[in-house]
Image 1 (spheres, rainbow, N blue to C red):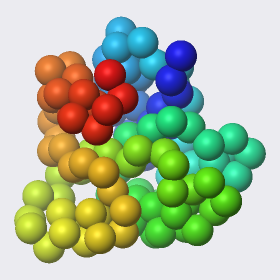
Image 2: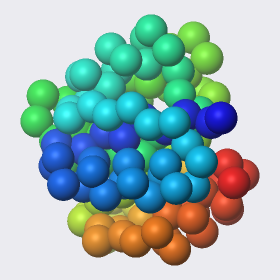
Image 3: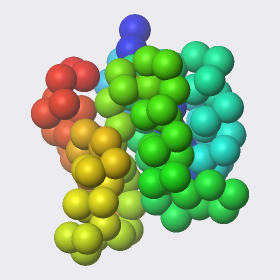
Image 4: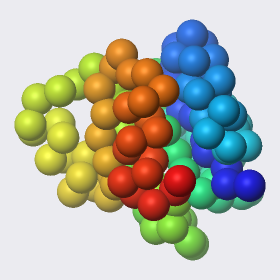
Amino acid sequence: MKSCLIVDDSKVIRMVAKKILTELGFRTDEAEDGKIALDFCKKQLPDAVLLDWNMPNMNGLEFLQELRKLPGGDAPVVVFCTTENDIEHIQEAITAGASEYIMKPFDSEILQAKFSQVGLL
């Protein structure tokens, strides 16, 4: 069973994502900011990370840059999931090592499509 770490400061978004990802066959873990997510990844790398951009303590981009420096940190597929939809943000995310980018609000179909595109389904 593949694992996905859901990183978002919104409890509601984490709940929705967890429900969808569980239905898609993932084991999920959650973190409410990038710092907590990074500590989690230092102990155990997930197969995928669903990542919010704007969070307290450490934002999604900072987390992604730190994740990619960890041993094996280039392995997890990172899907940004955010309200930031301008091309600069998207390019910055992809340059930092994001695999895909989806907009909030998302639904089951969008998540399934993106996770299929990156080879997780």
